[in-house]
Image 1 (cartoon, rainbow, N blue to C red):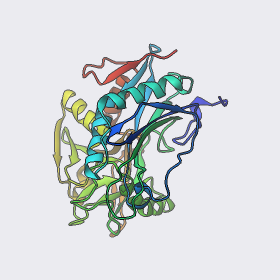
Image 2 (tube, rainbow, N blue to C red):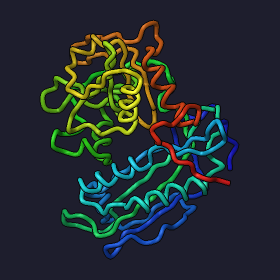
Image 3 (tube, helix red, strand yellow):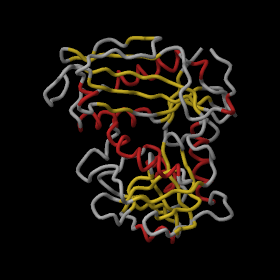
Image 4 (cartoon, rainbow, N blue to C red):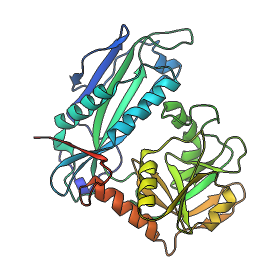
Length: 341
């Protein structure tokens, strides 16, 4: 194991000892295998390479204040991967196999779980790809499910600090009746050009307008958007938005903390009325918004006051991460304990 400065981790790849793999062949899943290789060997005509049969997930393990290792809402990631599989006609990973793989890969790489207090976490990346060879456009008959892990720090360099974002209308992340509601690779490929341009222009992420009308907020780059005003937690309702497990958790926390939760279309011009706003997801948890620039009109919506996160963003962030790190009561039963050596 290399000498890792846990407090300076970025959201990037660090080599760990093992990953776990399982193959779907002849209509059934095989046994879970352990590998130390970082490589995947497949046929050159594999459907993941040609026809986009590739889906993934992201979830985290946390070393808690009490020393215990917690995994957060893994069953939600499992079910979302099953939805992705159904959408692009891949074999579905059963709940039991997904859980076995998560527990095994965490236990095998327990030395890479960042210590409590460093802000780091162990990120799990489940991956499901079509490995069967096809030249005609059709689903594969063989699939590979695997999970690798890596210790990570904050997704955005600023950490839990307000960041600027940019609304784009000249790129679409996903079509209304396409695959925006599932976590497949093509959605991310479609977001790259807008995201990289936003970075070059000084923004942390691009916010996509809805593909059909260009009037409403859809995704905030690789995350869900939410706004807060008048004691309401408001987040977009769209068939082309990925159902974020972090957003789902924040909605439940917001309601428990006395906010009214609304899932509805959010007109772009409403941004200026929000007292707070943020992007949320597994990687970032919450990234508060400093200001949002409408790239087309040049209009700037200032959200954060004095460059600091708003009070509700702070409360929601502290409550959610408190549950994940075992600092506050997990009244919702979101975390499972993984026994490690």
